[in-house]
Image 1 (cartoon, rainbow, N blue to C red):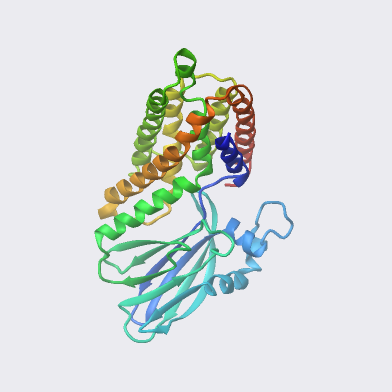
Image 2: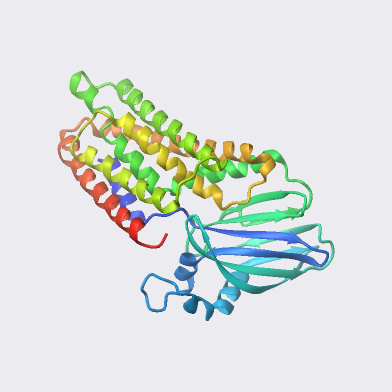
Length: 364
């Protein structure tokens, strides 16, 4: 029953789940300081500044154009870059609009002049952390020879940018952490997994005496099928071998939640592994959307892909490890199988249906 409470909290956490909030800051050194571009999602800026004046869920160019100065002031007030202990003077230039995999972004050009050495900077990033603790700042340093990618969060707001190559182990750990973060904030992926796990082990429970081993074995097969499937398509998509339109992917992920919820509502124990594998292929394309917009170093793409995927698996395993004892305990009660599980199925179908409609018809 405690697990059902956690599930209800999850359902209420994000009525319209998309890819977690990110912004993309690209920095290119110059003799005086640096130039750059900053991509910030319009939906995030709308939450902070209220860009959608007529509240029609569409931000027009007219609404955006009149707020460029305000957007620049808002963003630059949450970014500090210093050289030799003195702050660089950063100014915002032209704005343009760009479509990324998860929606529309404003792209703001930047320029800065710095004192002292321009081979190393200290960067302090605070955009959106006050209103969205799940937000991440993806910072790319392009010195003309290589790309270095960094991930900033409320826990890690500061970093040192240097033309010296970043340690490979450090970059690996950063992408691993980003994989863990993505699965923990990927409410649609977790909800699909939860819908598959809730009836796990019930067939064995009906056919014989209760066995934690039987439950563990079924959950292991489910998670393995999901992992293998999404790893295949994540790799194919990240390596640009195969791809699907983001709207199709996001809508199909929502449909997978509806299917899993219907199965849960009807207490059907069979077929879960094939559902996990089949829809896991679609979820892999969803994971890949996170990497599409990050300018990863091509020479180390395979390593970054491995780190991100490993992070997803570690985050997923942590969730399963926390849920499994609660699931084992709850299944001992008839009220779980006869009342709580069907109710959870109805709620999951309702949320999945809402996401399907929103993702297939609304702006991504």
